[in-house]
Image 1 (cartoon, rainbow, N blue to C red):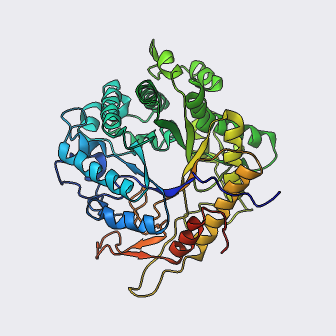
Image 2 (cartoon, rainbow, N blue to C red; image 1 turned 60 degrees about the horizontal axis):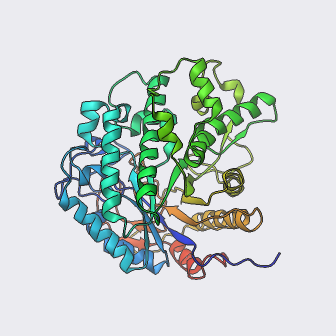
Image 3 (cartoon, rainbow, N blue to C red; image 1 turned 90 degrees about the vertical axis):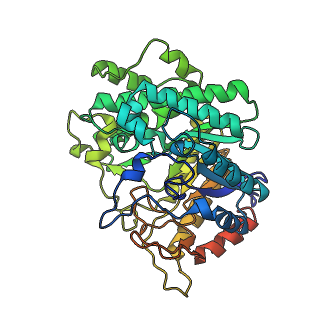
Length: 461
């Protein structure tokens, strides 16, 4: 096989969320989100300032342009543009996104918009307990349709819920506006079902009205291995894959949940608010691409799983260290072959384009104010994962639209830790000291700049 060339229209870029970048938590009429009221702790920050991209987006876009990036995936904050969640829209908040999107286009950076990234408007959380309510589901669809109408002539690529399968795990109770309840399996399934109905309605709205727009579902892909070749480990691993990955991708691409999941619901008498007409709503889905985040792989030991545990919760009990892989400080394994396996499997199974929209490695770093941060581990991580993606394309035959790194200008982690850094650009702040927020390219910045200048065809270290 000769040296294959990457597609000329391939997307290279960066992904973020609004609460992890923007700051400006009380500016220009923004309403409170559930994140805005979360206090700092000894090891975490509050969400008031983030990296102040609200005021510094031009600087950050210039850095992306300098790196030869041609896509930026951002989130439009629901509470910034609709302060009460289901009331009047805030023109001052929308004007910020007007400026941000126009600034991207001026730099030939394609915008991708994600419509929800965990930060429920506080009033909807307090009044309705978040997405466990169909009223909140309808409010999200209303918000989403307004945003799509406003930006349809400028934004071609759309996501609804970030890492949608997290709503089928216990993480759902942290990211859906859920403020009270017993965190039951029925509550989990109900919230998940409401988010899938919301996605399906936005999917249909886009496809019915805008033939040139593309929308896809997005997972935090649960890439997992059996701990041994013992049949129980292999079977538990297959159940995780079915419940946390293929159940959603089957809905996104084919308009229906997994038969196995549906049977589990029936057998266990789970009340997930599946109403007349819901099946028809779900059936309208037609993913233009399947997107996912990928950072690591897990390993499942079935012996550790309680006999009454739902497959959604197996990893709560049976996840254990993979002795064949190295990991970072947070025990996130480094597994580029797993990345290739996800891409190749998805394309072979569903036959729609694949789009990895988050990839990266978190590392604890500091800057002494003068010397470059030397992050060879990050260069090695991205080099090996981009090569794995290229192998999935050119050896395994997968169609891939692009590769977006996560937080490539440092942002706080989703659990409010600025010390877990993913960026190729250092942002000079800590959890409790804003400092000057200066942007400082790391060694990986210059490596990535060189790679993207050649459209990823040469990955030499």
